[in-house]
Length: 151
Image (tube, rainbow, N blue to C red):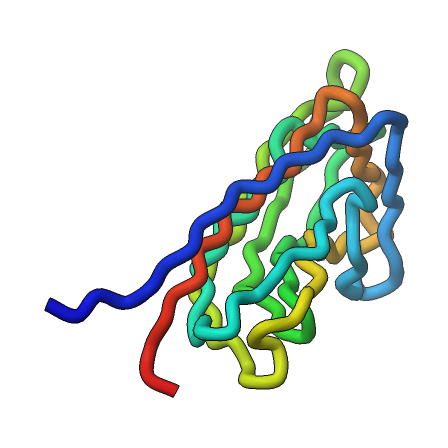
């Protein structure tokens, strides 16, 4: 039986200080939070990557937010998801949320056998009242599995 090579790694990080993001016009994707990025080695034989990216316990402050999240490996961005906290006006107007994006992406030939930046990408429309905060209670988790295949 011929088995394909696989390599799976889990990366974690938490900010040591508050990392706030208020968004931008039209919610353009940016690398956020700064703690959620790693330079990882891409195996020379990898043709696919399965990636699950979780921003756990990210805080929403000062009201509702609406935006998108994805991950990016090198130049390839994974499928985005949409998050919408809806309005909340009681208490301190803050809450924690988990944002999870996942995708299987093709690994370009030029990326194989090289280091590549894996990063969280967030698009937040600044027209909403709230903003995001990654802090010491936030954990970024990236589960990355590279697969061998036919070139």
